[in-house]
Length: 295
Image 1: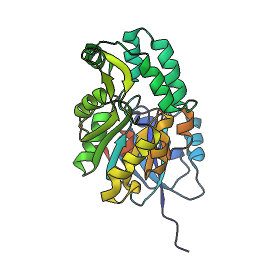
Image 2: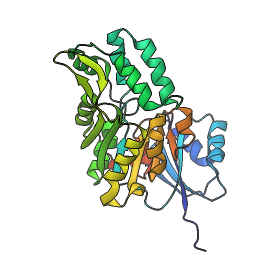
Image 3: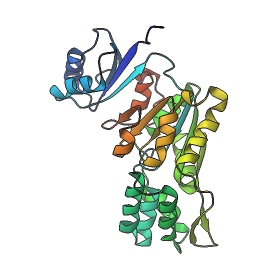
Image 4: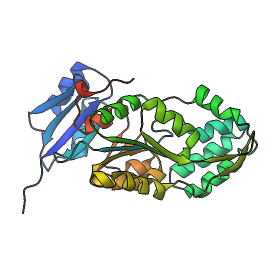
């Protein structure tokens, strides 16, 4: 039987604190050899097969240190495809909820969104119901919503630009809307985007979307299609927060739950819960001096 591949623990502290950084290194149940990825922020160390995520988490918590933790093998860490959800992943909002605010139905729509992202509702049915409540909304509101409400999450641009600089494909695949993915892709530097299309008349939304709806299975299919020529899904890092992201997260070589709903965080390969999207680079073994600092 071949020997097991070496295991690497990547630790990313929530705040830059050299004292906490040194204490984290000293208290971990790991070998004394470690590699600093970002001074005061992120490092890696080799661990034995007996050390678990819980062991590391408990050691850090005992010292009052908040950090994101990933455990990986040393094989094939740097991926050739970055495929990301948009709403509440690359951006800090759910676009449909913000549009609903302009339509005066945000409370109703947000409740449906939350349940759908937790996996309690069928995504396609939930999207159809929510979009119907936007019927009659003036098209000018779409740009106002993007300009006034939408914010790019910290680290999103650096993540995209760094992976591009190292030869990776970059794709947004969203259950949201192309009006927003087009703009977010341009702002971050993603090469391609895919989402649902809001149908409209000459001046207002019709309250429907173009079929078929892009949901959970379509996201998985998009990852499979975009990775066909680079070795398949094992070459992909997939990042998302909701239940409709889970299939692509589980099938990817590296699936990351980003500030995710519990059902997603429990089944992803690793999670980002207290830091930002740059942690997806640390998880692949990138050091900070390799980052393309895009804000």
